[in-house]
Length: 508
Image (cartoon, rainbow, N blue to C red; front, side, top):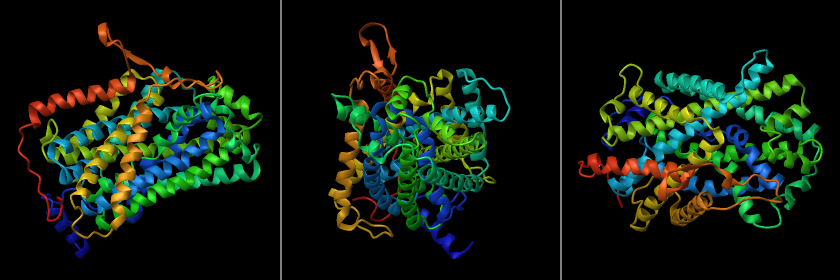
């Protein structure tokens, strides 16, 4: 063991933890796993139809808005991750900067947000893989049962990869990121140079927003961008497996957001400009369900079949490594909480295999939990909205805890990445942004523009007999997770001893 590794081990011991996970991630791998979680290919493919059908090409402007908002969050998180290089992200940060009850609920919400995100991404894979395989000569169905079975097999494979070690995960992630970046950039450049059917002016055309409630419609179209740009804190969640994490994890957090922002903006611009024929008719047909995967329609209209298949393969590879990155991050969060005795069956979930250096119990548990939403398969779209809303809620909880700590004088120690006097203002802006976007998710509205766009309010409700009536799906999911959490906390965690070891300067 060299000097650098010994320093990382001693640093981890200050938090009361011994080095059990394999510290194998370098600079690029740390960036790659965070970029893979964001995965602009995955999010754009999943919800491009929502943005385009609601706001037309004008929805492109939601991308830079969300990028700026999430970059503010990323800057704040980068500084905190430089102070707390331990597995668990917002759970760990709130544990040291707030109190154990607040941190437990933050971790609980974030844990199930991660589980739902895994389920949403796994459910997206069949939408790409089945058409690709059928184009290559297979004859698979496109019904819900087939989609569910393919998604379950993909989830099984990513769970097995997670069990067999972070080094294997890093190899797959590093390769997948290269595919995604090169694929998106190359396809975008070819579309812009040779297949620009639309004028750039379509990006400023607000007519697709309708004549009333234009702001509300645009905010609904923003869901695509909101679904893409999160998970950048994965670089800090894997801090115990990263070399020199106090320096490298913050850099990876920021680089992942900036990289995804640039590549996503170029790709979105290119595919909008490459929409064939009349823009208004394409948007109307997309909203009516004629093009369930408008990105594929755009690619197939401009490229020969072999190139369209290559695009589907690039997207499949990106979605697969995205799922692997999200699952790895969620597993490390579960491991971090279980190691502190904060979850049911903590002894099993927090145990690390001595040979593989992975928390096998946590790997299996996250795989099983992520598979449960597939039992009632209603499409990746619905799971994605629920997951995104919960992720943003956990980010809000983390930002509030960090802000209160700053007001009490934190940070008192130096760190390799620091915001200095700007830290407080970045934190305040982050809280404002997060709360505004959570309101955006929860706000009841009827987004019908010109009688052609599908209303977000048409999302299915969960129906109960009697006075409860219909409860919106997202609110029901969040309420159920919080209810179970409150019961478990009251029974098992309320009077549990606090075993947190706070290094010098950790608390404000």
